[in-house]
Image (cartoon, rainbow, N blue to C red; front, side):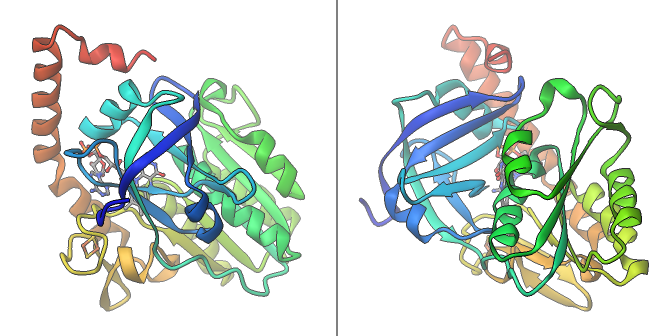
Length: 296
Ligand SMILES: Cc1cc2nc3c(=O)[nH]c(=O)nc-3n(C[C@H](O)[C@H](O)[C@H](O)COP(=O)(O)OP(=O)(O)OC[C@H]3O[C@@H](n4cnc5c(N)ncnc54)[C@H](O)[C@@H]3O)c2cc1C
Ligand code: FES
């Protein structure tokens, strides 16, 4: 393995959950042993590829694998959607990074995942269940067709509420509706973990704030080096500044300045759109069709 973690990490399983969401199970025995809930890796698909942070959505020391669930949103994640197949390899998988989630002495925990956020909340739900806590899961998806991992959650949750925007599965509505239902049935819930888009996490924080329930969110600001040096992933927490790569990515939801996080994410959009345009043009020049990648 090179100093940059470069080697050959075989993809042993790939599954597609929708046009844009895919799962890669990657052989990496050392990482599978070391990983803990809440941590992430930095991945390079090929030697000259961009370094992208991805949450360790599952890890299995016996199989010697870690599982990543990826949403194709831009150049690198779309390129990976096209190229990563069972039997192909990832050039670098560096980590585990970030502070592991604090699984303390909570007795009843609400684990909320929205969209892609369902994947990173899974290892936390499992860790709480293993610690002896009762786990109530709330999963939110746009519709039934893009749902994934209901089976994994049923195996670790004492109760599971599925919500879809269009009502095609479970209750019709956002995860906050599922949370209200869970909290009405279980007023003794003493901790909550919520992972999803910033706007969802902000809304979840407002459900638990008046009830005084400790709530943890996992933040995904743009990361560059992942070492606390570049300042790219700075987030405003209460009155201070933290770096999500080394101080997080888990933070107290009631202390996070979500508006600042969303404003910072929006600032990178023009550069990302430009990179995407260039990649699509180069795909067309090579005779490929970038949009074909989106149809897998
Ligand atoms: C701790 C952490 C864990 C993450 N876990 C996952 C995961 O499990 N699955 C998943 O699909 N995505 C995850 N992300 C987001 C993922 O890193 C980005 O979607 C990816 O880097 C986008 O790269 P791109 O070239 O495809 O898209 P781009 O066009 O470059 O960007 C698209 C969007 O992705 C985000 N993004 C871009 N570059 C970065 C970067 N270097 N770091 C963080 N976000 C970026 C921005 O919000 C941006 O608007 C995570 C991010 C962080 C910080
Ligand atoms: S990614 Fe550079 S400081 Fe966190």
